[in-house]
Length: 337
Image (cartoon, rainbow, N blue to C red; front, side, top):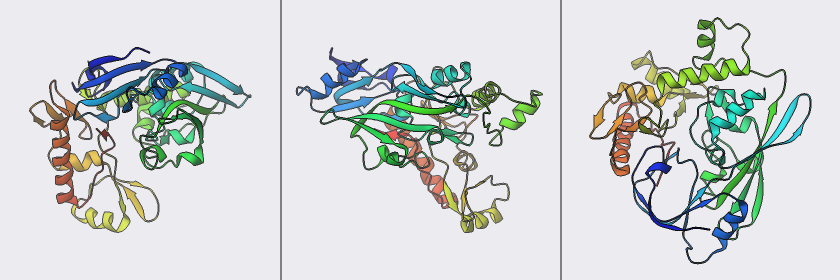
């Protein structure tokens, strides 16, 4: 176990925020993880995964533990399904691509989501009508205080919209080391009705799409709307899409007849946060090096040297303006540290 001091975390978060870790170590084996968790010299530990769903607003005066566990293993397989165990440090999109190559269906709609596998259950990642919980079996996690391993079932995780037990009562208490998935091997159930997937397939003259076709459609759509963190610092969607009552939606529709929406139930409607932010005039705006992406108002960006505090200040202003304009509260999807 090698512990370094005063290490910049700029390369370890997709916003590219240049804050420092007082102490830093990388974990590549479970033995390393146990050694880190059981040592007493650095009692305060900050767990770091892919760094794709966080906004760092300060230096981390603790031991930053970078989880870099690797490995993909087929646990069991039938003609119809396959169960796969994936270590937490595997890149999410690379894992999705591996599934496509092996003709394992279920994750194609989640292509090109940034981050690592280990952090995916924390916020129940989702896109284009599919969520992690739809293919999730269980995850292995180690308790930060006593280094004991626990297996969390689908029910244990209490998944909700961009939510889980790991963002609530167990927040900061466990380190996910492995996630187990169940995917299809044949007769894949494709979800092409959400967003622009079907239109993209039609434009490409694809009448009988495969999981690869759906994945490529999702990748093309995401690249047309969302910036690459390697080119400009960002964390994808900064805010959750709010769910409001049908009564409130009907009232707003009188004033904003073009307001887009997605029906959740007979009484609830989901409204795109990006549309709300765009209507408030923020899309494409820049405040120093903190800004809103020109093609997607839901994405806050770092044009180079913005601090986490500057980006958070902008997010707070956006949230207040949306609240004043629509009486809708948009909650951050990103973890603010």
